[in-house]
Image (cartoon, rainbow, N blue to C red; front, side, top):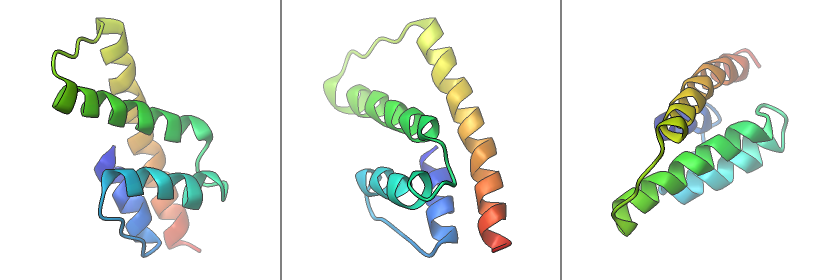
Length: 91
């Protein structure tokens, strides 16, 4: 999801250096401007938070259902990112 979000931002010549910058600019450039529904930004943030917990908190345990939901959300995010990038390219 991070790389897909960065690709969308790069399509608009925006290149944040950090994950938190990608998250913020995703909202500013895509949700606020109508390219993405808020649910995509929420899915990105959830995946980001899970990753941060796993990397820095240790001992993260996800239920099978939660893991499946995050994978599903990531797949949908990637599909939407392709659409958004194509939309930007055609503007």
